[in-house]
Image (cartoon, rainbow, N blue to C red):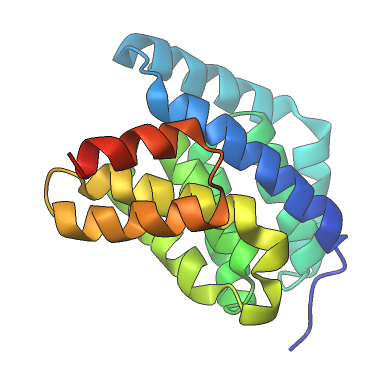
Length: 187
């Protein structure tokens, strides 16, 4: 399997930050009009963003260039263009189906786009894709993924939510939001 030339350690560090930022966005709500305005601004920025345009041209020349695809997906995320970020991360996961960061990034983009069902599914795929030898370096992201799933399932399947929150706390026992959710689920 050909791995992308992206510096994986830097990408994981970035994803940890994204996961931390995602927690904040998971707990905040925006009005639909504010969200629409942000999406319109993202589309306007994207159409004039030379980085995005340059990466799109590189990918046209080589559609299997996973490094450029990852950079493009990150650029879309930076401009809050969640639709294109999701589509690009999906392309990467087709090319590299065993590369867990693409699923985590998809989940983050879905979550940012307020698509909770697909975010949950992508976090589940991320968890399933992390290899045993990668667990140590992915603890924070795994903790957040399990937390998100537990949060999403707390009403529909409390027992499953309890299992997921226990896993979340296993990977990050200091996460106060996970501790609170655990107390709520177990009371």
